[in-house]
Amino acid sequence: MADKTIYTKTDEICRRQFMLQAARTYLGVAAAPMLGATIATEAFGAAAPPLRPRAAKNVIFLNMSGGMSHLDTWDVKPKAKEEVRGPIRGIRTNVDDLLISEYLKNTANIMDKVCIINSMNTNQGAHEQGQYILHRSYPMRGTIVHPAIGSWVLRLSGRRNETIPGFVTIGGGTENASGGFMGAKYSGVPIGNPNDGLKDSARARGVSEEDFNKRLTLADKLNTKFHGTFNQKQVQSYQGLYEEAVRLMTSEDLKAFDLGLEDQKTRSMYGGDSFGQGCLLARRLVEHNVRFVEVTLGGWDTHYDNFASVESRAAVLDTGFSALITDLERRGLLDDTLVAIGTEFGRTPEIVKEHQDGRDHFPTAFSCVLAGGGVKGGIKYGSTDGSGKKVVDKLVTPLNFNATIAYALGLPGDRVVTSPSGRPFWVANKAEPIKEIFPA
Image (cartoon, rainbow, N blue to C red; front, side, top):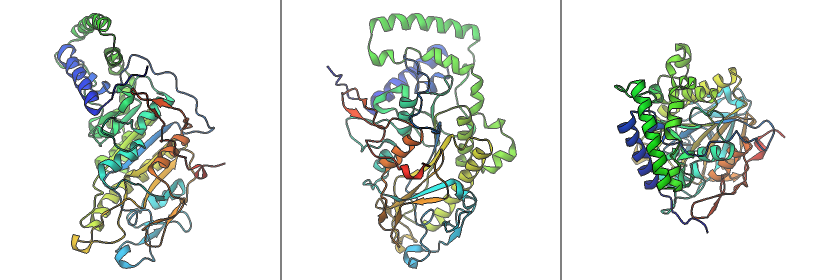
């Protein structure tokens, strides 16, 4: 008989906070708070072989939170009326006949590596719901939390590095790091400021190595008795907490989180802001075989003063994204790393004059981007009409976008994962990937 347990956000937070506090109070294991998101009794198996040749190995997902204006970035309309186009000019790129916004000058030089999807469409016009379906491929429900796309990647392909987390989010909080009904084992580790690296990854101050080992021994005895008394799945899922915490604390791979090891020229190339440094941290993490890294750039909710706001946000994106693609390529990592730029929806073609030339939410048409990971570069997929108001060719939903990420990694899109309540789920809700953007 299927387990009818309903898994909610509160369940995960309560369990994680309990283990966090217990580790800090009794062990001085400061690494445990971060590892509490990835621990489970059953070990991750070896990385599952991909289902397609030349599949990507890692994903860097750049999340443009707030709803990025497609007309002012990737889908410029130089022939549109001024009340739609605004002051934006299109500029030439290193690919003939491929125009992008003048706000993306550095990106113009790497467009031969980039595929723009200009035919995105969603049925979610609010931020929380839009971000949710972008990351999880399922609409929000009050009774269940669906896993983030990074959790699906871990579940279907396994970790590539056993000593550090396989799923990391940078700058975006904890929401998009949730493993949902898959539980703590497949959740991501959230990092706030990339310059701080992986916090709490050392023995707590005042706890000597001798005391630390004594506490671990005591904890192991208590755990053995406790798990024998309460032999429940959700209790057992934290049995390996302390062992993995210690393994991380002594791992050479912890240096992946230390941006101080990069030379100043490289750090400057990415820009001095948190997003650019987050992109640099993402590159370091995929070098150390972290499967999925998300970096968030917020501030795209441009109801007011759209053009000044987009110019500011696009400058940050332009520097970080172009540096990331250039750096991955020169290190021989671009073919193995899929870089995705996603956003929850676009902005209205109509400019709201009374809001200092703002643009409102617009789920009907918007743009996302893919680069590296075996994707064809220098192309646009799909299109909108002359005012960017509706998709006229090759409509793509966030579900198709996530299915394409899964396809790039060679993941089994038809693999069923059953929730604790017995319901079947798929990595992209059974959506079809965009296979045309990959070489035959």
